[in-house]
Length: 102
Image 1: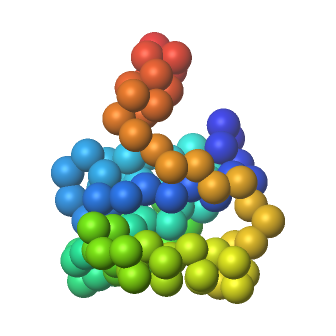
Image 2: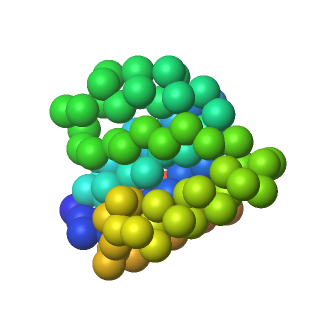
């Protein structure tokens, strides 16, 4: 699997492209930390896709500095799989992966 052993942070993961990227990265072996404001949708995504791979829901509004700080603190405290490579994905990276797969 292309991303086996990697941890990936996907923001805006509760719907649309963010949810699609989360699903896709999980199928490619990544451990996905799915971040969005709507924790209920993230939990549903994680439950619906548990057979694909690991998607870890994390509710946060990244427009709020204190919540960004809490996410960073959770990482520093080892709550979010310390030691793994964490990559913030944007659409361009997802597009490149899709094109490379063709």
